[in-house]
Amino acid sequence: MISCNADRKPSLEIFERIIAIILPVFIIIGLGYAYARYKGAGVQADMVSVNRISMDVLCPLLVFTALAAKDFDVLHNAWLILAGVLIALGSGLLAWPVARFFGYDVRSFVPPMMYNNCGNMGLTLAALAFGASGLSAAVALFMACNLVYFTLGILIIGRGHPDHKDSPFKFLVSPMMLSMMAGMLFALLQWHLPPFLFIALKMTGDACIPLMLFALGVRMLDISFASWRIGLAGAIVCPLAGLIVALLLDGVLPLNAAQRGQMYLFAALPPAVFCFMVAEQYQQEPDKVASIVLLGNLAALLFVPLGLWLGLR
View 1 (tube, rainbow, N blue to C red):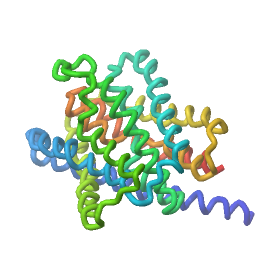
View 2: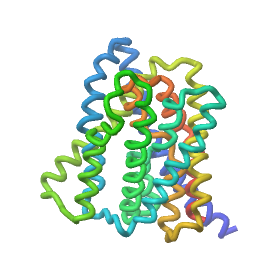
View 3: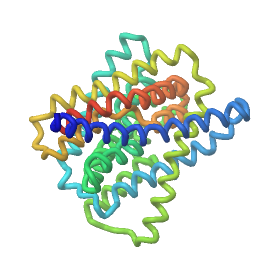
């Protein structure tokens, strides 16, 4: 009986921590929705400039400061980075036939399956579940996911769009890719910015998380009942596909116990809010992508504990 209670207490604490992280996400989304309802549909036009600033300035700074932080070690996390890349690619591969079967536009459905919420939710959960030392590994997975999404994912989204026919390699000079390459350069060469400059850049980058959530709440005005179907499918496929790939990689890659736990947590995360921002920029069914993100983060209440259980066994 004592052992049972002892095992139950850590599980309950982890679940309470997950709730404490996810609830603020939905509160901010709710604030955005309430603001849009109060101001009317015209508020979406006001958000266009905000979304552009998030895409071009705030989010790139978030990626750069995560990679350029002093506690990020590329070589130590090399196998974990590979695991993140394979999980992102494998999730997209498994999601492709699902999109075809249900008749969803691949450009709307597959990229969010490849880019999970490894930023605001993943980094926070990793710190809570694995301590301060787990943050470096979470940053490695964050970088791996960004690498896949802003190469293959953007190519999938831009395919066939009349406004994005100029060069298939234009994504390489996008603010996100440039910030990621600069962050990797700082990490590999062990360069460090002056503390006052790094703090200023990090504070600016951190602002993109609540802004993205608020923008998602505004977009909820356009969500129709039909969009909830693709939202439900995405909410299930994203973490399920990730966990399937993680199970296949478990025992194959030489990961230590902490990295193994990080891998399963990463695999179980829901689609990232940033996917909605990209869909908005490309006008790739942003209402449907918003449903995928919203329901996916709600489903995290089920899948994240499952990922933690698999990783901490």
